[in-house]
Length: 249
Image 1 (cartoon, helix red, strand yellow):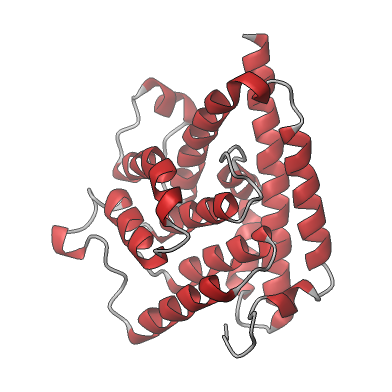
Image 2: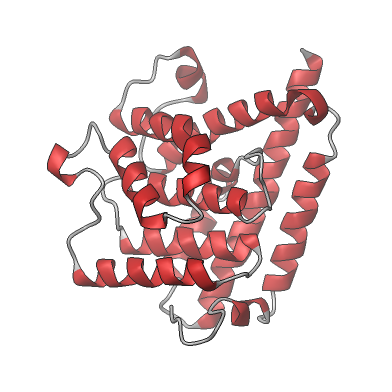
């Protein structure tokens, strides 16, 4: 990833497939926002989205918990507990994320890894020069770009995942940062879309796209953005299911 151009992510939007990913993800979110349940119950939908998102993100990071166990408060493994702590604080962190990316990433790691690493390691990325450099570049990119939300969120998530920057919970941190980006950049300002469930449903595709990210040139970056677009579509569908369940009572 380079910051040579004025807007380093805009060239990606000219690649075949990216415009379609931007359009289809926008259409999926617009269809969700048109649901009448959101007129009075958007807070409830967001809360359920965050719960399901925390569960799906934890499962992708190795938690054995089921959604039913999480809902009942019976899932006690360290990964799901950390993911739930992250979800509780996302609303507060969304106010800080636009201007303090590194600070928020540190907080996400401290929340997610509290039961997994020593206190002195909490909030600190892996001590590696390449990790530090690319996190600095990512912060610079976020300060400069006005690319579509799905493009930015995809790059944020892929960079954090591919670096394994916040082990052993890099996935939880990366997916939370992607959700914060979708909020900040206006695609999902009320945090309704269960992006994490979309990733979980496409887990094999996600693994393949991430493995290729950054290794095979622009085409692999585009493939990752396309995957994230599909994850948003599926996440919006999951949120529609939440709306339908609320409507049924």
